[in-house]
Structure formats: structure tokens, C-alpha cells
Image (cartoon, rainbow, N blue to C red; front, side, top):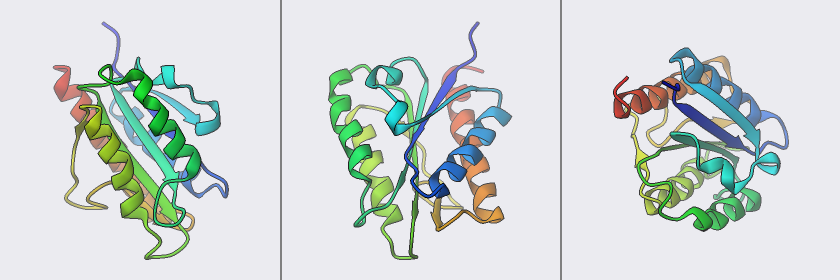
Length: 161
């Protein structure tokens, strides 16, 4: 029996979102899932079809996702109806405390809900998904690791593992 997979797609220009993606990946792997981690520029829409979980990380621009992340999400309509039942999650980084991290994450989660995906809320560390202001601190990296592990545990529960 194949182990479920998680796909982490992220954009990072300064390395902050990439550091978060690496920590999320560590959490998913800690729970035994296979992980495919790709920069947005290396990801294809067909990458969305195989994994049981899709996690997207974005820097925040003007309180929203980057244009590249938004374009990828918009073009995911190509697979409308084929992502239903997959687990979806998101994380974001910004340059300031009120920089729009939560609104950027909600943009991604809203699209996942339109696809019929399953979203889990969080009681600590960021209710919608992890956020970081600037480079993630050690505490923020721990939050990202736990977030990845929670996503993986949800996938395992849904797949009877």
C-alpha cells in the first residue's frame, strides 16, 4: 500500500517563505508521509492530482497572495472536481505585523473550499495556518513543524492509517 503524499508549493523571494516550507515539510515527514516540495515556478497544475494533501505557502503582497500564487490557483480550475476530498492548508509570511498574512491564507483556503477540499482549523499557532513576520524565528519554525504534522495526521485519519 502506498504511503499518502503531501505536496508543498511555495513562492519565496527572500527565503522567509522557503524556510517555513522546509519546516512544514519536516512536520509532514515526521508523521511518515511522502513530501513533494516545489517552488511555484517549478510546479505544474498536474502536480495537484496525485497527492492527498496540498499545502501552499505565499509571501504577502498588498494583503493578498503574490500574483504568481493567485495565477496558479486561478488556473487550477483546469482540475475542478478532481481535487475534492483532498486536504488543503496554507501558510504565509509578510514584512510587518499587519501585513496581511491571514487574508493571504484565507484567499488560498477559500479556493480550496471551492474545490471541495478539506480544511482543518488550528487552535494555536495561527488559526488559519502559520504566519511569520520576516524570517521565521525558532518558535515560528516549531509552529510550522506542528502544522505540517497536523495536516499529515488528518490525511492519515481520512485514509484509515
